[in-house]
Length: 115
Length: 116
View 1: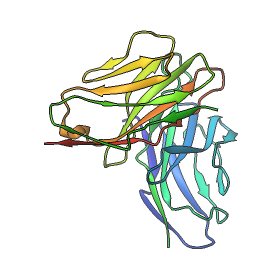
View 2: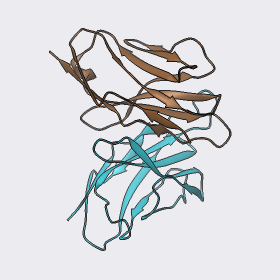
View 3: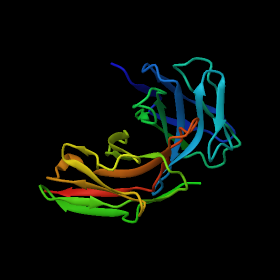
View 4: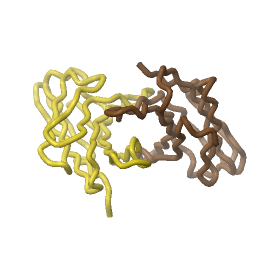
């Protein structure tokens, strides 16, 4: 089945620790995105990537880093510089194809908590 | 910059009844897409319906339909014959269609409860 896989489902971070959230897609989509969701808030864009080896900052990129070495994969690292990392993180992807462009499909999310 | 506003933090509806969720947006773009996404308790985001701004006809997907008023920058979602499985957070989202424009701007959501 085609889709977007995020892992792990739950993640705990200790003070001063970097953690990496995985996002893999087999939809052959060019673009991938990371969003953060806090209670009572909509989704806020952290980073996005339109092609391999290229990515752009979103609205709340501070304290996060990403890489895009493969089309299928877009991991997000939450660094120790992110002082309030507790949130629900969603990965999405979309195609450039006419008609379906701009439709973003989402993974099941990762819940990150601070110990 | 685009903004999306959902003015109803919470709503409830009796099973089998109809409910309308409101969304307004602000943009200087002329061509764009609008979306409604559903996030059930599982927290998986699911696309409900999409509207292209250049199309005057309102989009419909089974029990879900929209009322798109471009001049008023309004994009409401109507759910007919509400079912228990419709209980979820609903998010309105916007994206321009210009080259290189792929970002979605989301509203803060409306929590819908369907009551048996």
